[in-house]
Image 1: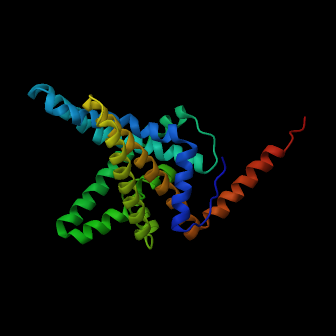
Image 2 (image 1 turned 60 degrees about the vertical axis):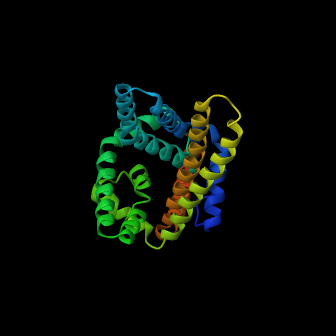
Image 3 (image 1 turned 120 degrees about the horizontal axis):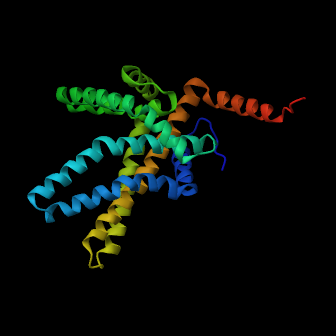
Length: 251
């Protein structure tokens, strides 16, 4: 499936993200569900656990939130980027590349978290602005292999003039999750197993998360097309690769 790499209106970004989600639903939702479904199940089971087992469950949830979820986020962005740019996707290669940047990614996320926390300690409004500056930090790390303070500065530069579009994407992700969660929640309330509601909640959150990730990837490349003519650069690479394939080696 080929997708257009070009400057887009906000509605076109959302439409392209939805198309990516439809075309690769199992892959994209599955990568989110690997973490979000177990997290929802763990939260559901907490009230039924003893003090000791509850502490273990809380520790497991914390580990997933701090380690597994960020890793899956990187993996998902890598997959979406490859699919959007029309590259072949190998799951093994995606895991390998995600693991390669994982240590630097953790450090960068901690740095951005501290910056956001510092801004919120000053005032709410500065905290919101700083949070929005770093919306594309995962995409910068995955697609540009840029980390640390340089990644923060790069995300801020890309987001300059695009804050409202990022807000729109995040709000739509929340609305999508709420609507899906409400609908699926009504459907499973008739079943006698409470844990099914937790599974359903994890799946609906996974769908919304996959859509949000796809929309931010498309937004990232849209901004680069607008500010850096990435669409022309991408087209030049495609032409070059096709010319290379067309060359017949001589003996």
